[in-house]
Amino acid sequence: MAKSKKQLREHFAAKEAAQATNDQLDTCNDAYTSGAFQYLRFVVHLLSAAQFSYGIYYHYYRVHWPSDLVDEEEGLKTRWGGKFKYLTFLDVILQAFYHTVALLNDIFGDNTVTLHSKSKLRLIRDYVFATFAFPVAHNVCISFWVIYAWDRELIFPTALDAIFPSWLNHVVHTNVALLAILDLFTCFRRYPGLAGIVGNLTFMLLYIIWLHIVRYFSGLWVYPLLEVLPFPFRYLMLAALVGFNLVCYFLGEYANKIVWAPELKLLQQQKIKQG
Image (cartoon, rainbow, N blue to C red; front, top):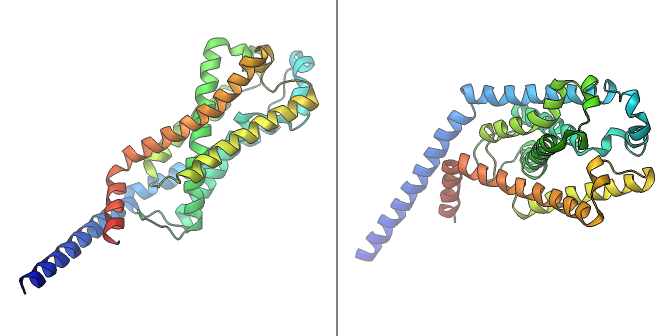
């Protein structure tokens, strides 16, 4: 009889603990999915989608290379993919796609703190952000500004200042990273683990292959820096590009764990209590 009472007490204690965890999650979701937080997330995605979409339009249709660069650059910039050969341009397309999906999820999907979301928009949003949007944005931003500070002629010649507006330069090289960080603080997500790592590496390896296709058919490397580097250092740089993109993935995962630590802990407790 004493054993039975003990088991009963343990059962009620476990039930109360599970209910307390659920109550805490409900409190989180009340704050997270309504009020100021909800509007902030919506505005971030709306303005980001609009900004990057306009940046793509302006970059593609309004930016034309100066005549004094035509001999060196014209074939590189018009054949075999045009501007689609640049990681910067591909990244701004990626950011526009991500924030559009995130905006649609804000309207039609689900933003609750939960173990398993039923919203396909939410699943796409979280995977694209973790695997591509966050790491590629930071790869582009950090790589560009580091090389720019070292020798800007290797990545953004002075002659481009006349036709490439400063605001567009920051949209494609700075805002991509800043808005990804802001999104990290406004959107709860669980990282995809191995699937995200594989996707991240696959994206960058495909881009490296694309660079070689362009080199084969145009006779020129996409980036002037690759032209001046000796053979071993060129491939060391390309390997570093892939590796740094993966580092940015793990940086995003680590930051996500810090920002959303209380919510992730509650979900882990809920998972354990549900068996």
